[in-house]
Image (cartoon, rainbow, N blue to C red; front, side, top):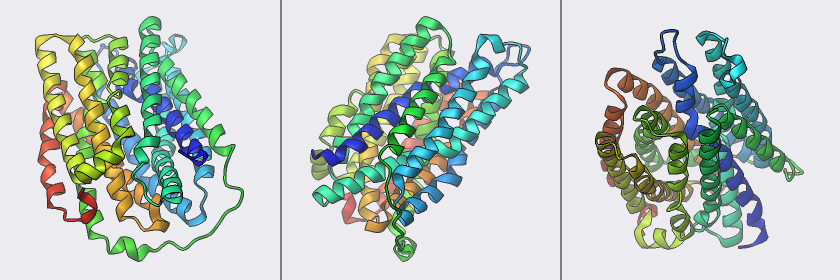
Length: 400
């Protein structure tokens, strides 16, 4: 691939390395520091934090997308937004330090709340900006974006390396706050890398809003994205919580998240061939079905106490996620006007964030009243129930 793809490769790797250091351990960390005086976990606070973390992106994501397309300042926004995310990571880590044990539940919550506000506001817009940077480079070099997976695979590599190393460090040190120190440090690196090659000039362009207003197919697709996100992200965000509930150690939690991305490598790398053979629709549906089956197997593992099985079963997540995500990004890009690629990707991620926000409240309610096993089972059902929406959409861009 040409040298012009180097920057998006570095962005993908660094972003997912940072993401993997903190987010898989987020609910486990909250579970251990947001505890009442009687030892009871404050599940309602965890649900509120997940809701806030996801919903704040709803505010910033569309604004950053429009500004990126309007003024061609993707690298500048990527750099400037990464720094407050780093600060948010450091703030979140503080109440987990042993010297801060004297803090009340309310004070620990306030520290984490400050971190979540910064992370929620400024991290969510970064992924559509990185994706649009990737897509724009591919369109410039090849005239199409089918090779997106060849660059996105570097994100999967960053995720694998980060989650496995972080999980091992947490297992050895037994200090969960380290995950958010690593998270903050890596986002600091991402900010410096982005600003190091930021656009020298600002170019003002007209955004063709009439294209978006007339795009009924895209609006229907966003309904599917919302429901899929509600189930997928609530299951993902609370998988660590679920594992911790049944006694899985931190290394297995981290390693299972890391190894789950291994199947992403061949699927992302050969996504061009898969898209040409299956089309976006079959890729998305296949991913939904596989993820649903994985969650059902999780329940069987919990009921039979075979924790080591999380390693091979989590591999299904990598297959499901990479199939879904490549299909979703490709279909969104196919519908987008050439001057609205970042805006379309931002709306896609905005809708995803909205589903994730409600998924946090949904998850905390189910866990509080029924337990984490019920959450996993219900999320599996929702993933299957939203498939008819994607079947209803008729578009040449969904076909092989």
